[in-house]
Length: 359
Image (cartoon, rainbow, N blue to C red):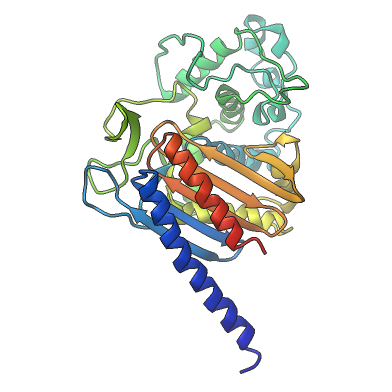
């Protein structure tokens, strides 16, 4: 019995943390007018705490469940990078592969400043590609064809624009368009579209349930994203005409929290030195390979801590992920709204989760 006592105390402590955090999280949700919050604290093997709180929409009575789907915005970048990394391991590409090694026919009509950009440059936002984050973007022509064809036309257009290169004050230039260029490289060498690669890697190989664009909320009950207009949150139906201007690989996947946990656990296992779908050394490079921003993750060293972090939004959902690379724990928060209140509430909840599990 004495041997069991420490484990019993750990279990009781975890339950108490969980109960207090649920109360705190729901108070945050209500105070900051967030329709739904789902969150989890995990390590590489297990889920330490998980909850789904609130409602699918401010206008509907149906309540949150752990089967709800969330649009993850720019947290898609880590998943797109993950796909590309797999094909680097297979030898289809190298980190030093230049974009124009794969698309030599595009070189003549592109700015000479892009001549030597590499796959690694694109995934770490060091290729000088225009950001394409919405406000202030260059006017984009109306491209035609399949999603893949439109992304190719978009990238040909992007490469004619003036570059915005990093400097001492800005060590990288965060670019959604850069992730589309990197995606074109893997599409070319595999003969598969990004959509097909998502299906193969995440849904077929890893048995996750990853889908594109906003969660479907018209045919069955699921989350509605919310935009902030006229000083209030308004739910957005999934039938709304919406696209990310050809930067889908940078931010247009949706997923259930439980499936996203499994993706993050693969990363935690790799950081602990264990091979899984990718090699352990590959995970180390993904997270630590470049300063400030590595491959789909902000690479942060501060106050004796070492973190991989990222947030994501396309204006209707907001997600935030922190991976503690020293304690091998991760903290995940999904919401179905986006404004200043949402961001503040999520920051407070993230702080609370990390305080509870910092040891």
